[in-house]
Image (cartoon, rainbow, N blue to C red):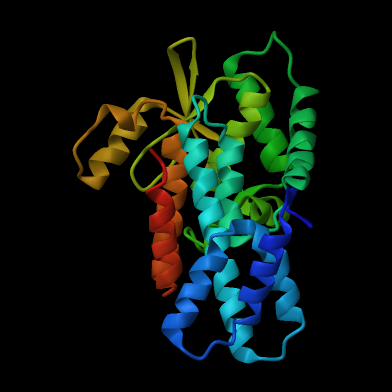
Length: 287
């Protein structure tokens, strides 16, 4: 039998079926051994478990299957994030999708790409090489925030749903991080040098062309342009030590770390402590 593109041997099929038949084991210590063995199959076992769930009316079996599938998917996300982190070049969209799949494991990358490429195409039609940096920024702002209607969630700055890429495209509403990530991804596809800046309690963007700084942008406020002096005033207002990293472009790995840190805070705030611990575990995967 082929599962998830991998052929299982007859012996593995028999063992897997036997393990699933034991999901109603009353002895918890014995069940933990069964569970551990099932988990060793990884995502290959999920279709089998889903089939067993549908064909059972036992609440205990349902609960155990749901827990096992959840653990398998968490580990799959962790492994994908670990591999992403180890790459020489960390694609920001890929990282965003991996994190989003923690909450939405059935998320389809193709759907996200289709929606993204439409935005990129709309912006590309308005751009040309004769435009100045400021004019290019105005074009992107117009396409993202006017034509496609993306906006910041001003009623709940740390709303949980705003951290996931599929929700961002569906609701057109995001926070400083998700909107900033979207902006960077679009700019990169248009060969416009816009990068993230790891500013405390905020996430802003910078336009840096061939090492020369031009301006900062606030994606949460529809891409409004501002100066380094305003960043300095903001840091002074926070009463924290000034660090060079608060003014310079940061790596994509740091942006995904910020996304996970925001998720951790949001899950904690609403009392989803187990999910918060999952996010802490995912954060540990980024090297």
